[in-house]
Amino acid sequence: MRIIIGSKNPVKIQAVKQIFSFDDHEFIAVDVSSGVSEQPFSDEETIKGAVNRATEALLQGKGHIGIGLEGGVQDTSFGLFLCNWGELVTGDSQPIIAGGARILLPDDIAARLKSGEELGPVMDDYTKKQNIRKNEGAIGVFTNGVIDRAEMFSHVTKLLLGQYQYRLKDKFR
Image 1 (cartoon, rainbow, N blue to C red):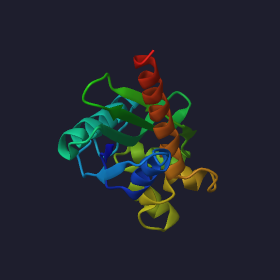
Image 2 (cartoon, rainbow, N blue to C red):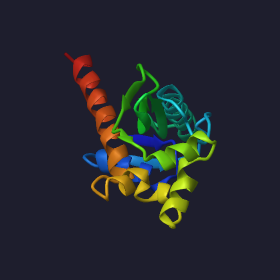
Image 3 (cartoon, rainbow, N blue to C red):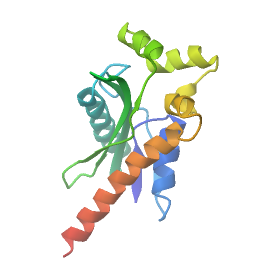
């Protein structure tokens, strides 16, 4: 089965490969646009980014499954939360959508995002490192490495896979 991943980000690729490693799949990563802001600022926008990535990946990669993963933030009355969403799409069934872990971002980080900056560069500046988004991510920094970005996206990918397997099982009852 050919699985097309709608990103060239190594942590997203790693997450999908890890979760779908149970069988002999071909993985292709394609660089597709999320079609949303560089910094998605709501669940709705983050979901739309995941949906756009999955749909475009399936079209470009001519595969059996397209997977889109997108990170963003959600503003609440409790503060700004890190969020992530994913979509699994095939050519012949309803898309599958799942959301993952959430943590409250520190006020100083939230303020920079609310002023228009993007989380990736803010985290690079905050940690004095480069490419945090392609490594541990903000989740890794603010959980002291207990959960990293690949694990965060692996969790969402597990939710997508589980729903997909359930639908397959249900289809053959």
